[in-house]
Image (cartoon, rainbow, N blue to C red; front, side):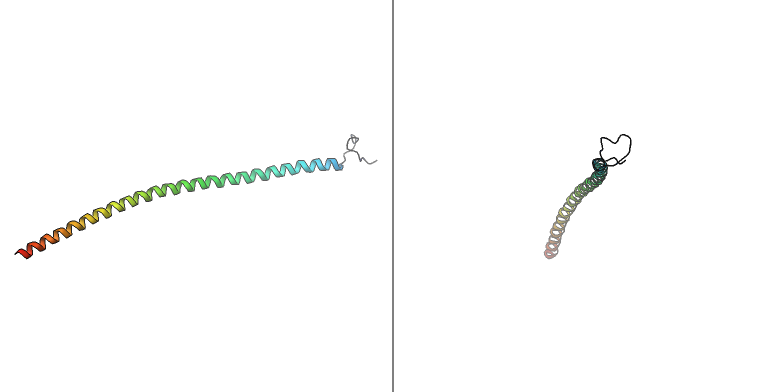
Length: 99
């Protein structure tokens, strides 16, 4: 005797369309949840890596600004030194001409 009605099948194991649909939905939900969790986990890891990279970039920008400030100070000192050298050269030339 075959069992076609899901409700009346207490003595036999049968997969009717309803039972197959329910099992399919459950399995699909489990697979969907696993895939969603996996995608979320990957995105979270990617976001953390991006945050670390951005922090490193910010640190490099701060270091670069510091280096640029030092270069600027060096250029100013260099300019002052050249100005003093030219002034000294002019004085030497004036002394030589006066002799």
